[in-house]
Amino acid sequence: MELSSRQLALKERAAAFSNGLLRKRGAEIDQSREYPFDVVEALKAERFMGMTIPKEYGGQGQSFLDTVLVIEEMARACTVSARIVVEANMGAISTVMAYGTDAQRRRAADLVLAGDKPAICITEPEAGSDASGMKTRADKRGNRYVLNGSKHWITGAGVSRLHLIFARVFDESGEELGVGGFLAVRGEAEGLRIGKRETTMGLCGMPEGELVFEDLEITPDMVLLPPSGFKRGFADLINAYNSQRVGAGTVAMGIAAGALEHAIEWVKTREQFGRPIGEFQGLQWMLADMQTQLTASRLMLHAAAASRGPGGSAFPDPTLAAQAKIFASEAAIKIVNDALQMFGARGYSRDFPLERMARDVRMFTIGGGTAQVLRTLVASKVLGWKLPQTRH
Ligand code: FAD
Image 1 (cartoon, helix red, strand yellow):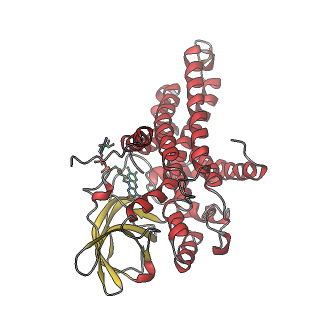
Image 2 (cartoon, helix red, strand yellow):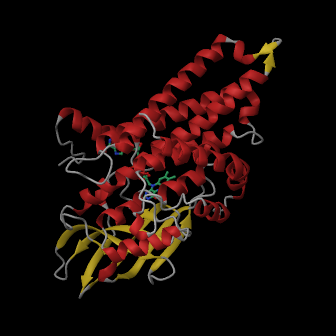
Image 3 (cartoon, protein in one colour):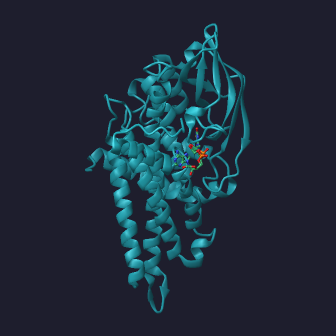
């Protein structure tokens, strides 16, 4: 896909940012396990937060493809920063921009432009791949909803301010109406408690944690009503998640691009048997395969980012997004591992970035819909069948 001169300039600006601050901060963030508020300030100054927010709300009205170009550059050096850019432009914020009222959009835009990375809260201990089996409930009481339940593995738990919470909705008679999205701002919403933080393998500066809702009261202005109401609310809200999927796939691809860059430099300088190791065909063919997989991933992600789902959806096509995420996340794990291999023992050392990249890249076949569940989505499209996964 050919990029415009504006897009090439944007990519260059993101690369300069990444090669400067992020090359230095990537390893530090990993070791400290602390959320990088300093990087957020720098991202804000460069206007990489809220790029996709429409201009009337203070953003730049840029596309998902524009965002993808920036994310790749960030992920080459620092995965945590790249994930902040994903969530400050896709996921919850793009859902609010597509489905929210004017006041909700304004509120969400103000938070993100001030540096917030919103959290999207779907997964529960008993409802992972089977997200529609969620137990968190929103009971209508007068003109309000009262939320009870819990979520886990929520990216940004304890640092995010804006939360988009998925819950089953019940009316006052106890009848179930479907699934709704509820907005809550940490620090303002009573009944939103941050629980345990997970000790993760990678992405160490990004908290992944539990949220507990204890009679969390949601006023009518904070109910995000999906376009076809609560009845088909889950489908609408999950549809909005396709932007996040493309973003997540791009982070994986960006890590792989960074790893390949390190590997190319290394094989030209490291000598064994009296010659640079890049002269050995065993490694040359590995590099060729790595580059091929990377190029294919990038093309698929760009196509998905630029696509629109059925019915003029504001979000990427679900099948293209799923295919791109499956391919890019699996290819990235292989590319990063092969890059680490080329570094020999040094690849296994914390003094070099490859072991951090190998830990960081592993999550992208899990978070945002596992590679298996996304394959079912693609198979359903290929066969033209609905493929319910329950026994009955
Ligand atoms: P399970 O659903 O228990 O799956 C276990 C295994 O079974 C997987 O391999 C899966 O592919 C397979 N499996 C399950 N069902 C099927 C099937 N029908 N066919 C074939 N295979 C199947 N969630 C949020 O809501 N918000 C977040 O911000 C968020 N961030 C995350 C960040 C990270 C780093 C990670 C690791 C996860 C995050 N998640 C988040 C949760 C993520 O979406 C879930 O982990 C994911 O949906 C899988 O659910 P699970 O972990 O319960 O696995």
